Structure formats: structure tokens, C-alpha cells
Image (cartoon, rainbow, N blue to C red; front, side, top):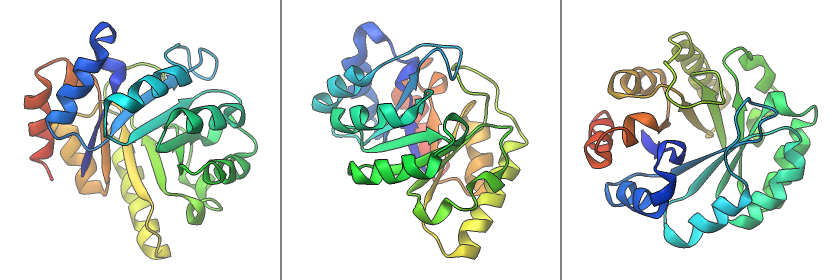
Length: 214
């Protein structure tokens, strides 16, 4: 399982330092939470943060768009240097168009499901996807507690992937620590986002604990 530290929990005044800390400690991806204060009740970054990160890290930038009207933002974040864009199924009535748009802009296409959104919302989309992110907390804030029922959702998605012969990556985000990381790994997750767990301690030590699970 790959580990993607979320910069939402980093020290914004020392962001380059905190990015380099996790890169040197062996992080696989860097997760960037984009929140618009409308789709979720919090405000974080714009495309400029991706542009700023791109020259200071070799890690793939995994950009999670918690925004309304994602079709407007996809070109801007793709041009800024995102490697993967993750769009909420709940954020647009035209999710297939958004997926096509991501591919047209040369980035990996991912979709996100909130805890209350069923897997059936993905039925027509799975063959088009590079990544599916299952939220294991309600989106919008870091430091929340993992929702145990989401482990079963991950497991059902992993079974569907196998049955369909597809190869998209399954990502989880929210409340990930050493205990819950093992739960989602066993359920079939390929990527785990960890923010407060990594940055509220020594990042190298915390990452090593998560890396030991795989």
C-alpha cells in the first residue's frame, strides 16, 4: 500500500521543509486537499499551491478537488502540475464529462465517494478510471475519526474491480493511522492518505509505521 501524506496537516509557514521531510522519509505521493468553502465547509488552496509544489518535489501530486463546478477547475489544476485529479461524484451532474476532461488534459482521472454515497454511483464509470478514492470520514476537515463501515465499502469495491478485470487504484482518506491503515490494507486499499497522523508527530517515524504495514 502506498502512503500519501496530506499537506493539509503540514506547517504552512514551512511547507517546503515539511514536503521534503516526507519525501526523504519515503512517501509515495503527496496529497493536496483543495476546498472551496462551498462544496465543503472549509477553505484551503487554489491552483497556485500546486504550481508552488511542482518544482520542490519529485513526488506525484495527488490533487483532491472538494469543489463545486469541478469542470471549471480541472484545466487549471492540470496546467499547474497535478499528476492525478480526484473529483467528487456528488459535485457535478456531468461526472463522465469531468473524467473525459481529465484525460484530455493528460492527468490521471480519479473520482471520490463521500461516506453516504453508494458504490452503485460508480457503475458506469469504473472502466474509465485510474483511481477511486473512498472517503473514510466526511470531507472538509482533517483530524477526524475513521468511519469503520467504510472498510466494507473498500472491500466491496476491491471485489468489483477483480470481477470486472479492471486495474484502477483504490485510495482511502480520513482517520488513517497504524490501526486503521491495517484495516484498509486488508480490505484492499492501494493508497492511504494520512495527514494529522504523519505531521502531528515525527513524519519519518510515523511514515515508517505506516510503511511497515505493507
